[in-house]
Length: 152
Figure (cartoon, rainbow, N blue to C red):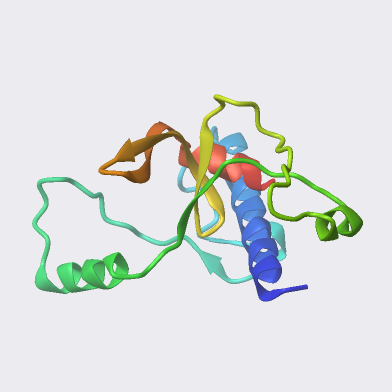
């Protein structure tokens, strides 16, 4: 198994644990705050504590330290790619490909392309040409909830 596969499996497991914890919290919605445990052990994880987070507002002032932290995150490079389609072929057929060969893709002509960031689907779009270069116009951005569902 490659590191990318292992990282994706870890990511999928973490997302599944988060979804299970959220489902459990929503089923406990009738319990008062004093009845809820402050140090929960969900999904076999011990010593898990709830983090106290401040409410984010657009008008709240951002300090120098917060700006520095945000700048560090904003400078992290990511790989964005557009996927026209996929196809599975045998190695025998792969070795027979040469110039002029046509490979049939699963995607139907006119169907939106997938926009992936670091291999994760984040949007759909259509191809455009701007100044003799290809680009993509986003037509549908995948919500965070939908991305989590697709990981399962």
